[in-house]
Image 1 (tube, rainbow, N blue to C red):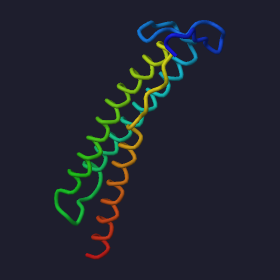
Image 2 (image 1 turned 180 degrees about the vertical axis):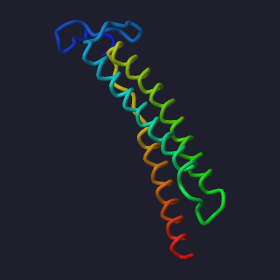
Image 3 (image 1 turned 120 degrees about the vertical axis):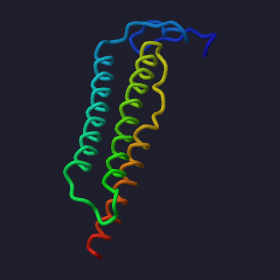
Length: 130
């Protein structure tokens, strides 16, 4: 629809590909709240990683606490970095009147947590078997 005149829901022209406009502040604030939620999730994962390494007793397999804590910390880093990238992409899309970018971060986070949960089940099974 490049050649035709596009009209926004408010009745004004839709900005071109490179033209930015000031969006309704509510959209920007909602994007910011979502970004802060990703940061809180990252911080929680990091705190869980530290707690596993520092507070839990040693598992049946030596060195496992360090591996689990390291995986949680790595997932925290991925979540924080992905949250920043997501915030930037959504902000650019809002300002340019483009569709929101597709997000892979929730799938990465869910897959990482599933792997850690399965690893935890194996550790519990090893502890009860011993």
